[in-house]
Image (cartoon, rainbow, N blue to C red; front, side):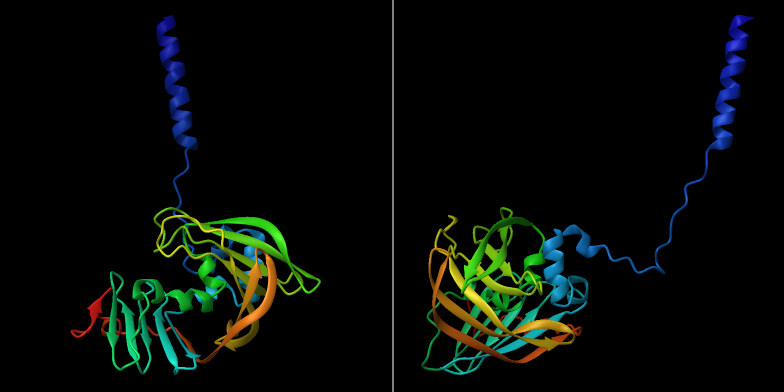
Length: 264
């Protein structure tokens, strides 16, 4: 009898639990606009991104084009923002990146003597600040502020996880104006594929901005001499013109390696 009572009580409990179990509801958020992208970044990084137009808005674009005014002639860079394929065009040479390899074509007497594998996205990264500092695989660390001409700029150090990008050993420090949250200085190291971190810091000042499709993009970059983290005199500057930021995606043939090109 005792065993029957235990069995009966067990059945009653199980049935009660089944009656109270509610079906799983698959929520449909298709009609809602959820702003969750910026929540993955530290608060100060999000404020900087928002001051320049916002990372959510930036991610809606597919193609960036800009021209640099150089003494030897204009240099135009076209970049696919989603996979970072690129094309650099001048009167003297073309450099491209297919997504797998860099290539080079020299068109005149002024041959390109640098390393296309290093150069194909170099100026794009400097120009597309601060948005490129929101890439995957980044670690953010607050660092000592930078003091320039009696003004102090808070700093955020950017480090990359191993195997992220061509040179994960490279480091960046983004310094920003605490009042406007706009990026003002960039400190960076260059390892040149040595796989060893560098202690030699270089500095760029983001002095002038231009509005393109409601995104704040650089107009002038200034390179400065520096002794450690003490900023010295201006070394040179670069002017960026004819900027195009569009949601249109270019054909694959734009970045494809021509038959006459040499792989690098």
